[in-house]
Image (cartoon, rainbow, N blue to C red; front, side):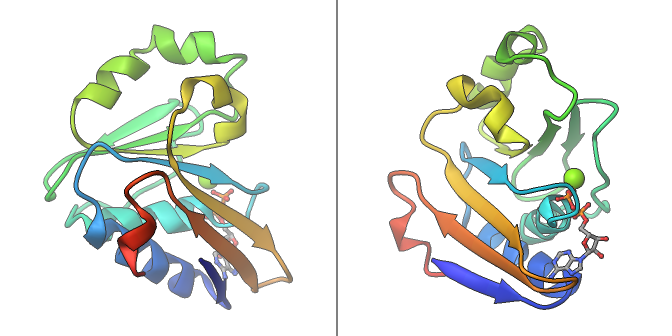
Length: 145
Ligand code: ADP
Ligand code: MG
């Protein structure tokens, strides 16, 4: 599915719509440059999950955990990660087993650790236009965003 957004709020709204449909256990794997809107989309995911905190970029911590919603959200930023080995060191497999939602920025850095994600690819088409494709993952074809 392909969407066009023209401001950060629209990208957030798209994330929110996806967040409302998630059932737990999903991995959302982002692809897109710095400033594409991966964190904005994740902010929407959190809203859709009913999480009351505002999501901020986890660049310096690798992962931020959010609870208080319908499902837990684990927001990863792999930008500073050398390899997926470091991801396993911080307990990636445990996160996968916790039944929450894992949102992963710079997922291409750890592609060998990620299985069957929902891909969210964000392309900057201008200052404010973004082309966003959302692609399942088995079982997610029926998301009807
Ligand atoms: P990333 O996490 O991909 O690096 P962020 O979500 O942190 O990106 O930042 C996106 C930036 O792009 C913000 O400064 C935001 O205001 C700006 N922006 C402009 N148009 C859009 C849009 N349509 N969707 C998302 N962000 C947008
Ligand atoms: Mg970001």
